[in-house]
Length: 47
Image 1 (cartoon, rainbow, N blue to C red):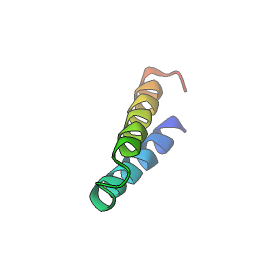
Image 2 (tube, one colour):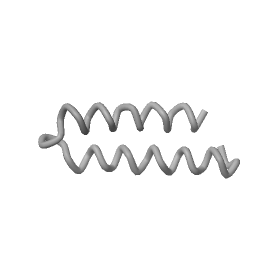
Image 3 (cartoon, helix red, strand yellow):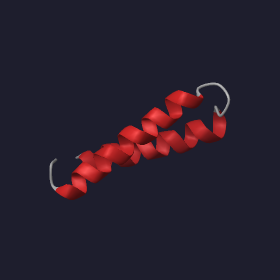
């Protein structure tokens, strides 16, 4: 479950980075950070 959420967040980050690069810069990187944390937790078996 965490892997799916993480992958969706990575895709949203990519779309946001490519489309809204100048508008919501900090928010895009927060979404990426959350996605990476969720993926790492999935692979560590905590989800």
